[in-house]
Image 1 (cartoon, one colour):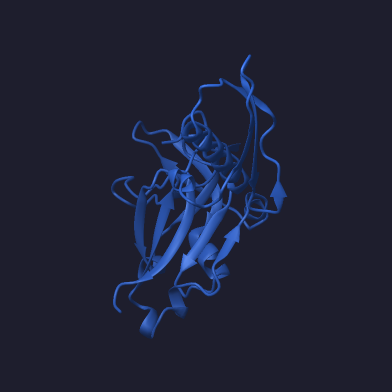
Image 2 (tube, helix red, strand yellow):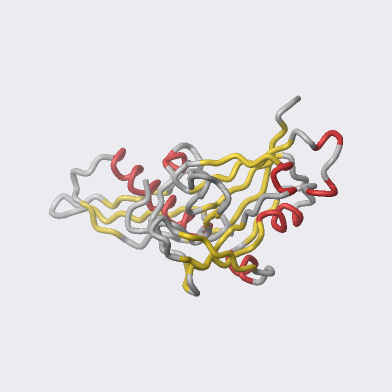
Length: 214
């Protein structure tokens, strides 16, 4: 689970990279350890010289290196929205690109009667960027397609493509003129016409297009 705004993907700790650990043993003091790793974009020396206790095991050192690499890789991907599945080719929208897309405002009444104004990009417009057919373009073999909107915590919600004929769905990045709270954003699906807010996916980072039938 995210803590203090940092997410560590435990899958990174598998054999995705082999850290370089070069201890220099000293009998009269702690070992001097240098750890290197290859980041996603080019080769980056992600760790400085760190002093560790001499009795630290090799397993602990490898775990330390793996966690640090995962932190670096995850931080580099922050704010990226991935569109994949029945999309050719898959695509990514960075936070900067998202802000440049046409935005709409959507007013939503809270349970206490307060009116909240969300600003964001229509979900249908985002799908159109990936040539996913909706509304008048949806026909034939595409009728059974649906999307799964996924958040960083693994929570997902399903939207069928025919719902876009009349439904209102946006991917919001602002609430009342300010960026979304860290616990909700940077992106959140807003589905105001649902009876409950069970499909308001927080911290949206992936939209996957699927077919219901083979």
